[in-house]
Length: 206
Image 1 (cartoon, rainbow, N blue to C red):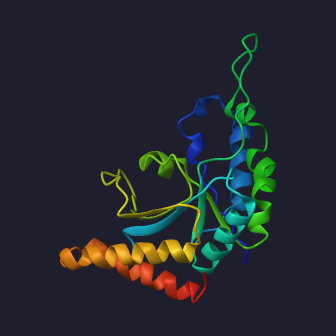
Image 2 (image 1 turned 180 degrees about the vertical axis):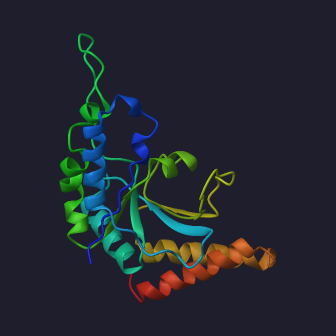
């Protein structure tokens, strides 16, 4: 089943009071029509994040999306679209006006080549900010923050335009070596188990 996961977190820091009730309802309705929840990882306090951008080569992004789909993971983008800037002679625009009416619907086409392939797409600018992500792609094992998060450092990170299998293999080797010197580290043990599970789901592929 094709799944498209979007969060509206990127709207929250803006001037939400400027939205009319009708605009709020329209945005919420569009989001509800597009959102489905991804399967929860068995490890409740860690997760695998794959951060990407539409600036990446389409072939690489599509392959990564297909592999992520097979592993039950999502591709995470910083955001969508370009904010419409105010001209000096204009009165301040509302959020819906600044980002364009029907923001989600307008940008569904941007991700269509991924969602048509069954890839899971997620918008999470908070993840990019929290981990100071300035280059993509990255495959990371990160702590899950369910409220205020004090642990902002990724547990494991693989960078570069490589296959998901290659990245997960590299992370698995890294965590295995670290676990030899930190056998009491429960977080590393969970990371090792989670990576092993995803590698099994991917099977033997490049």
